[in-house]
Amino acid sequence: MSYLLAILLINLFVLLLCSLLTIAGRLLQQSGRVLLKVNERESEVDCGQTLLASMAQQGTFLPAACGGKGTCGRCQVKIEMGGGHPTALERLQLTPAQIAALMRLACQVRVREDIRVMVAAELMTARAYRARLLRSEPAGPDIRLLSFALDADQRLEFLPGQYMQVVFNQPWERVLRAYSISSAPSLQNEFSLDVQRIDGGLVSTYLHELQPGSVIEVTGPFGEMTLQPQHNETTLVLVAGGVGLAPIRSMIAQLQQHGFKSPVLLFHGARSRENLYFESYFRDLARNFANFCYFPALSQPMLEDGWTGQKGMIHQILELQLQSMPISEPGAAAFICGPAPMMQAVTKVLVAKGLASDRIMTDPFDFNI
Ligand SMILES: Cc1cc2nc3c(=O)[nH]c(=O)nc-3n(C[C@H](O)[C@H](O)[C@H](O)COP(=O)(O)OP(=O)(O)OC[C@H]3O[C@@H](n4cnc5c(N)ncnc54)[C@H](O)[C@@H]3O)c2cc1C
Ligand code: FES
Image 1 (cartoon, rainbow, N blue to C red):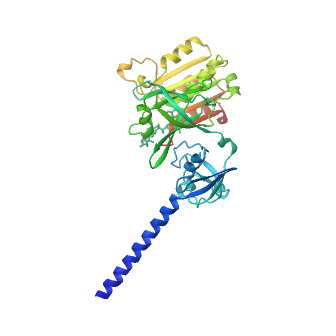
Image 2 (tube, protein in one colour):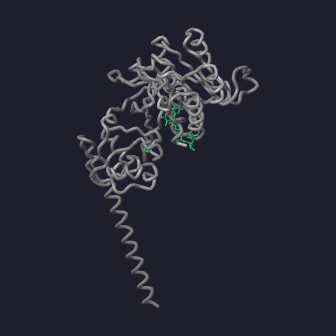
Image 3 (cartoon, protein in one colour):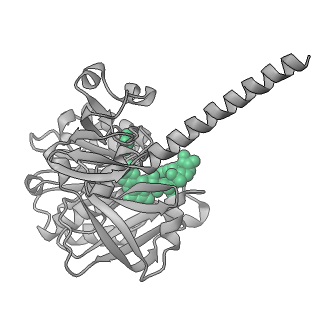
């Protein structure tokens, strides 16, 4: 009996020792420094964090529309050395051909050893900025318009439609969230964001509670849904759902500076009137510029809204309106921004009305859900 007990105690002791050694090994490995080489840029970074965070520590900022959850596929890089094997999530997002070509999602790779990464040159242009909150104004029950100023020596160059990533540092994690720039690019030392507060939302709540004078870190600009100079000369259909109006506002500000040379049709869908922000501003714009048309619609108007305008989902209103407005001219283009189901429904309508699918640009807001 005592012999069996001794064997059991020895086994327990060996097991405990192995566990302690493993934990110590992990801690030592994670607390060390490793070499990170991104294209020709080389530096030492902390071991154990994600490649996305390590690259940011080095000064290389990647787009991360989903905030690093592995669901948007925007943080793709080629890993030539180090980085271990692709995770199950990466295998879902990347094609077998991409995996064979050594492509990985930087947000899913843990940096535990020296690592060599190749990144497309256009992804190396984003920078980090210190942004001081100038104003925070309500634009509805859960939307605030936040205006930020950059440090005097900083300039932000972006195209309308692009977004910034707000960095929210927690002791254990660098949290990122994407917010579209709603101001015009001509304001190079300032920019604004339209932020909808999400119930229980970490960063949207933080931004809503931010006091003027507070400084936040943002990186960017990012995003391919952009208004290009040639869009000044062509019919544009702009469709926004709720706060999806933010990047569209930036586009409209730019188009207005050129005097709306071609027809611009803005469709904005919201649940009730209090969420239909900038309504009177756009009504004025439509009165003053013959080329600017505004089609607001409410899906669930409240009695007190006194709404006599269009009711329904925005894709239904779009379909109705386009019956009398052909948009199949060769250069016509559309920009759609909002929740993914709304964007799919709108795209379907536009394609059915003759707009080529490569002329329809979209940017979903809901990778984080
Ligand atoms: C390219 C891009 C541009 C964006 N631009 C804007 C913008 O201009 N203005 C803006 O307000 N937001 C924008 N977003 C959304 C924004 O990035 C965040 O996802 C959003 O603010 C929620 O973040 P959070 O940290 O507050 O919530 P989290 O802490 O991430 O989420 C809290 C909870 O809310 C749920 N949730 C997350 N997002 C939503 C949502 N949209 N609706 C309902 N439930 C949600 C989550 O599943 C979770 O349960 C954009 C997103 C992308 C990808
Ligand atoms: S940030 Fe990596 S997949 Fe979205």
